[in-house]
Image (cartoon, rainbow, N blue to C red; front, side, top):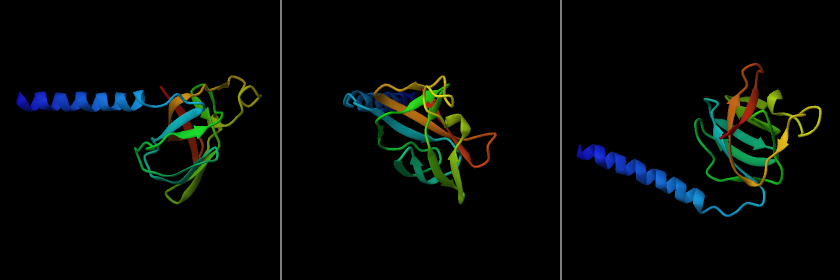
Length: 137
């Protein structure tokens, strides 16, 4: 019982620390993004829409937020251009994540308002060597 209480206290402390970190972030003037690697593999040399993310380990989240002046999304996919290496093979942006908001390639696209976001990275199911970037709620 004593261990259960200590465990519950540790969880509450961890949750409050996460909330405290988010609460202390300054009001952003741009779109600020953390990336979460859900590909099941390490990604080397990741670049997303000119932001040099670098190495992102399997299951890891970037420690810092990356700043984007503008960033769009459509149907839950972030509209980005990306390249990274997984298991020695270059992977590029999947078709679900390409386009510019308001154009024929992304007619339902919307621009994100300045704020803090998380985007998860996945290997596209139907496209070899392609990555999908999904908005995390």
